[in-house]
Amino acid sequence: MLAYEKFQFGSISNRFWKYGIITAFIVACFVSWRKKLNRVREYERKPPSLTVEILEMYVQKLSEMPADERFRPLTNWDVFLHVKLVLNEPDRLLLDDYRLTATLYGNEFQVVWWTGDLGNYGLTTLTTKIKGESSLIAGYRVTELAKDVQRRNNPVEGWLHFKALRLIEDDMPKVIYRLYCSAGSWSTYAEITGDKNSLSTEKYFQKLPKEQTHGRGTNA
Image 1 (tube, rainbow, N blue to C red):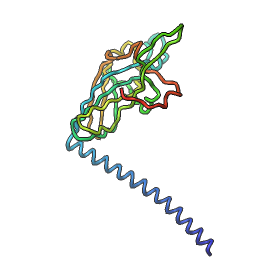
Image 2: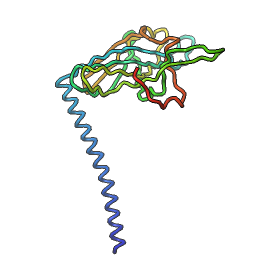
Image 3: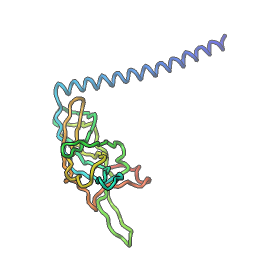
Image 4: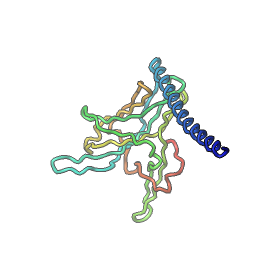
């Protein structure tokens, strides 16, 4: 009888924990949904005021797609943006998303936000020849632009990494990039043209060796 009671108690306890975890997860999802809904309604009632400025842009060739002699080759590109946000209203703004569009002659091309990988890259700012083919390369890591703008009139800076797909190299200076910052149904944007590319032989992004990708980044 005692063994049977212990077994039954254990069975009930396991069931209790199982359903308790499921219930807690459902409640947490509901609370998160309600908070987001309230935030959306608040932004609809009183739209935020956010100043967005693109300080720098680096557009680098990622990979070239094979093409026959009749067509110019299409190329995929890395797009790195150095962005500054200044919140005017309200006291705090939690952004949902960053989105970049690339437009050429009225046609919009596919751009993907490559979030979470900026720790794998470094911005090279100086390359010095030492001897023969050896060079000393110096630069710094960058950090991703935060979504949570926590104080009014306090500039927030950071970087965003996108991949622009299937663009022709000769057309890149004519491309218009538009960065959207959105919260709920509200959004604002900043524009920059392809001829503002800061890429040079001295300044460019490159992937860091694996042993250097775990350090702390710094705001640029």
